[in-house]
Image (cartoon, rainbow, N blue to C red; front, top):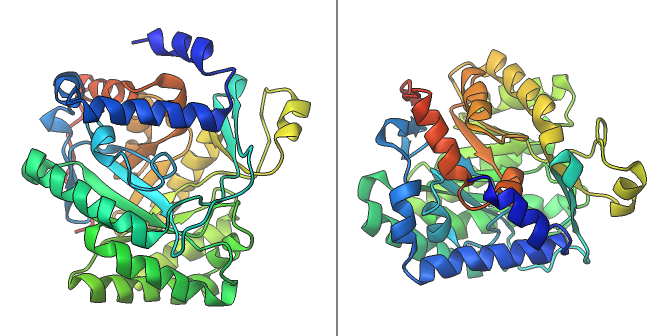
Length: 363
């Protein structure tokens, strides 16, 4: 199982990070297309004892894949075969957009971190919706009631002015909600100009109300709604977002997105500076992400589903987040360093430690 880190250094560490990601993702999808995923699942399927219920939805495992890996819903089934309890697709915008100029993805290998300024590159909600529909139908046929969960993360189209952001999110909500097990409003990426301004309670309230209204109208049901926040928020702002989520009856909060901080890195400062602007993810985010989780848990208790992400690498990390108040845990950056059997290893570690779901989290 420790073969992959050696393979990564030999095959991918020298390669442009975005190209390496594309090649790896194509390989994962090719394994699925060839029908080999069924063989893999004998080793990767989460143990039944890991089943977890959050906001009325059953997850095969509390551990899932964060948004950013599968931006356009092209590999949901393939990723599910690797053992992820849920796959969060996106971030998807109302309009298709190419994202920021390349290069825009960089590895900081010494820190087991990634710096990105992708800029929500995706095909747009209208193009992604049929992929989600097909993937959901396929998962239902294959797994039945215990299928992996599909989350859909939506964000603002770059060319849309901030004053028109609510309508832009409405487009994504009405287009994608029918195929989502849960929806995430992303207002915390540092790579879309002005986006983080929407995290203020005054801006966030009408946005979340609009997405709730649009998703309910499009589906005839209450689609679980969460908001994803940045680790760079001041504690007072974290408190405000948590209280707003409770006031609006949101199902949960995802904490946290990438950080604009560069503190505590061991990588060469000049090399880090040469990468330029962008959000940092991976191991350096662990302490702050855990701190944010604990603060949110103090305010919300079990009234919100807290999804913890940021610096998660091992089963022990997942257990720590669950003990700190999370109902679900996500990872991403470690996937790039640990390889395709990472989720399975985390699930085995949870099962070996005797993890058993403690019950239903909010609904």
